[in-house]
Every structure is written in structure tokens, then in C-alpha cells.
Length: 76
Image (cartoon, rainbow, N blue to C red):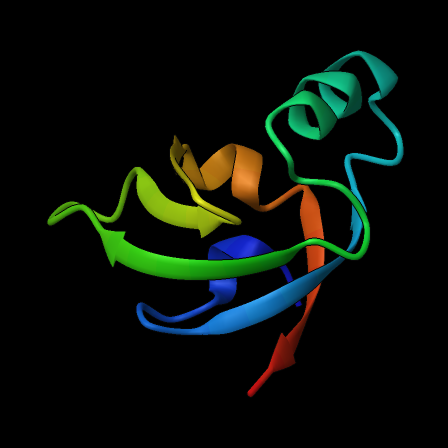
């Protein structure tokens, strides 16, 4: 499952992020989106893009296209 598929109010843990795009992977890592990080999807914009996510105490907006590169597992 990818981060783009997580429903609003869903919680997940990142398994890997942009494995095939190292340049983009370093950007995601610098934002806190790295393997093992706990992520909560807070909101999805009315037209479905972007997603608002919370990583630790940080709120991020991420495009659905970019969120599709982040593999996650659902947590409760």
C-alpha cells in the first residue's frame, strides 16, 4: 500500500520511500518521511490533491503523485 492510498484519519508506518529515485528520496528523508517513521493522514484537499500528513510534530502537504512513491503499512 502507498501513502496516497491511506484514508483521512489513517495512521501508517513507512516501509520505504522512493527506492528508485535517490534524489527525491533524500528530499523525503529530510522531511522526516523515512523507513520506520509513523505518519498520520489528516486531510485530503477537496479535489484529492495534496494530502496533509503529520510526521512527529511536523505537518506536511505532499502531492498525491509523490505520496504514491512512499510504501507504507497500516498501524492502529
